[in-house]
Length: 109
Image 1 (cartoon, rainbow, N blue to C red):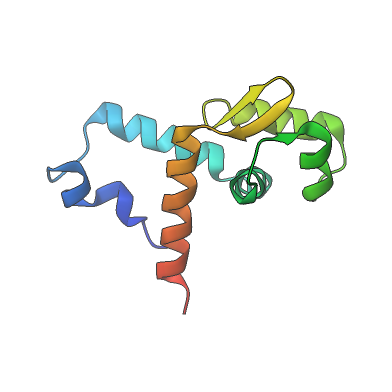
Image 2 (cartoon, rainbow, N blue to C red):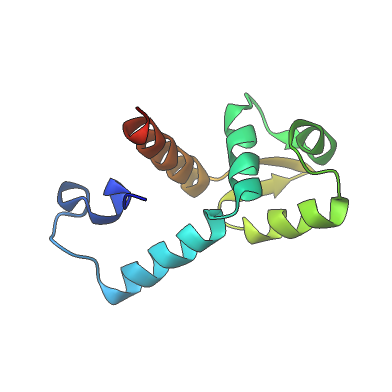
């Protein structure tokens, strides 16, 4: 597996390497999105024109177990927002999904 270019892109960071704190942050974020269901949730929210209700989100993804979905939604804290029972990507979540999407496009044959 190739290392995403956004992890070490010198132009994006303006220097040649990451600090220990940045390495920790990137590692935690990659750990969060390493789960396929979490990426599916992010992608589903990213496709939506507007925030989605829990029921609509659940209908769009592959998991039917409420407990499992709730667990993964909690793991995505900071990447998604919940307001008035509606779920949407946070700014950070939008940026991350765009980076993951860009990397997947670059890696596809």
